Length: 111
Image (tube, rainbow, N blue to C red; front, side, top):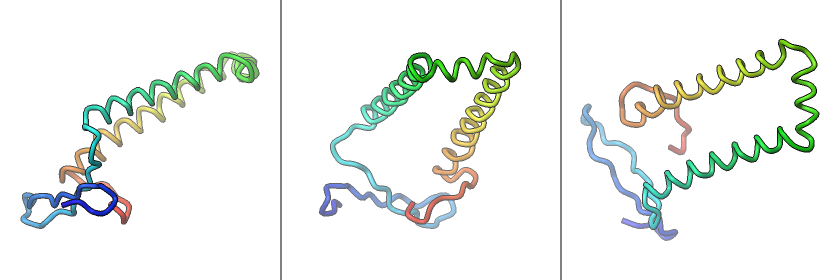
């Protein structure tokens, strides 16, 4: 069934426990593969803009700050990798399986 703003609302099937799940909202008109590809392209573009900002213009000041002390660059790099790795593990290892009723992850009231 569709509501007035053109969004398809599909009631989900009964899960393993027999309890009904909440309705899933699906955007009409955008294939899932295209939406994923556009998201990936947006992420790549965002990282390219951040890279350009850090290597040109005002980013030169950041480069001077990072190279002022020999240990500063490895610490910043290690911190960024730890934060990114933690996000990846929590999102793909905990959050995504919880969307399919494997495990648990807190959700906002509007989900």
